[in-house]
Image (cartoon, rainbow, N blue to C red; front, side):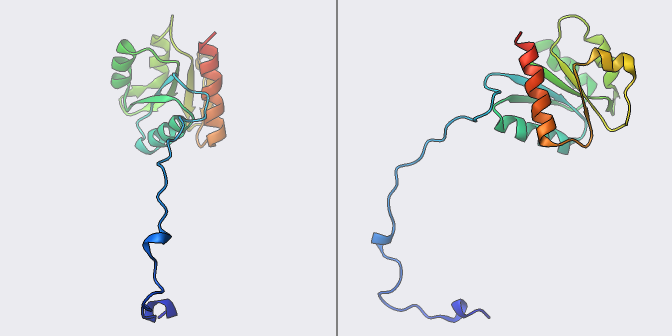
Amino acid sequence: MPAYCRAAPVPGLGPTAADHIVVTPVRLEPPMGVGEGKTVLVVDDDASLGLLCRVNLELDGYAVVEARSIADARSVLEHTAFDAVLLDLHLGDGDGGDLLVSLAGARPPVALFTGSGTIEPELAALAEGVLPKPFTLDDLLGTVRRLTSASAR
């Protein structure tokens, strides 16, 4: 048993009211990142990857919306404008590539998530970026920054 667990309190030697300083509450500034006012859609059926993207992108100042399926992504894309989309190629209810092809026309920039080593050249040509899994946080943030700066043009 450590000695500090056996020590008996000594009268007059403990903390006093003078030891506690009243401090004015600190107001935290908004995130320091570049994503202020920009919204990213993350389409992936892996909840842990969605959470990883959400937390890190929000820390960089982005608003993040998650979709776990192709159907959810279609629904969200119909009602909300996004500055960028991160899209997994292999989702439980379909192929992310099919969704990308169907988004032809005025759409936000898209980066594809893929766990496989290669992407069909025709599909890669439709996307503005590719994030091979696993990826680093620097790769994630760099890709989203590039996509959102492209959408601002």
